[in-house]
Image 1 (cartoon, rainbow, N blue to C red):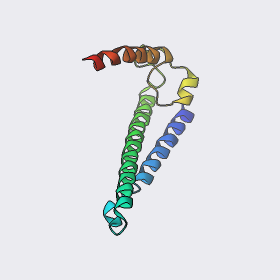
Image 2: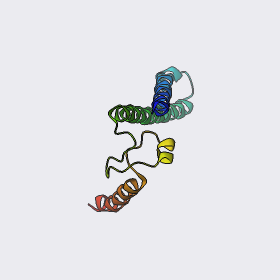
Image 3: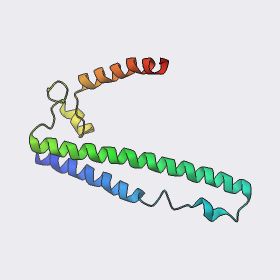
Image 4: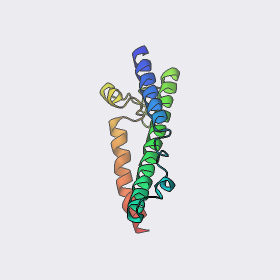
Length: 127
């Protein structure tokens, strides 16, 4: 269990470090700083900057979600629930936990959830 705790903490720290590294990277380029360039170039630069900003926000959101899932996994480890599927209560395969240590469902329950989502998606679109 100590090895699992250390691995989860290490991955959480790496995720937090990546979040910190993204901190100011998105806002470095200011569209107003390019006023002296040609109009066409400025418009292209503004589009690129906007796209870079959106990608940064998306990446930051994914990293925050992962950090939260890793913190929750550490809490499950402390409470003794780590490695148990939150849907069926059965143990999650060790190789699955190795690959995705913050996972909360076994393969069978995850597969069933994904199938339900695929069936529900067309129904949402047709409404």
